[in-house]
Image 1 (cartoon, rainbow, N blue to C red):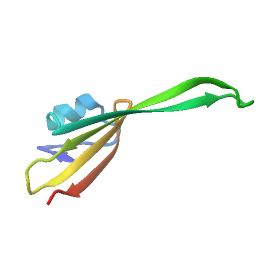
Image 2 (image 1 turned 90 degrees about the vertical axis):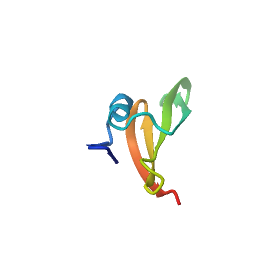
Image 3 (image 1 turned 45 degrees about the vertical axis):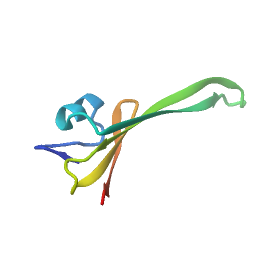
Image 4 (image 1 turned 60 degrees about the horizontal axis):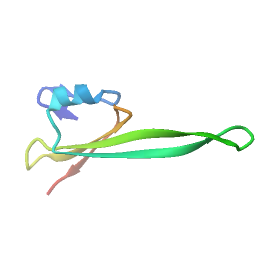
Length: 83
């Protein structure tokens, strides 16, 4: 994704993305949890990941970009026409 004169890449941190692109139009945050089990199928804990989706649009005629973060790092970028 291009922001001004910079590019955003998978692996970039939230700090880097905000520095390159400014604040997003919207932020959605959710958490995914899964049960950890040992080799005998006995539960021993819970693993959780925090996901955020940041939405960007440079101008009304530009693509609407969604940047997906997992645990603070970009894991996917998608683009959709907004009109």
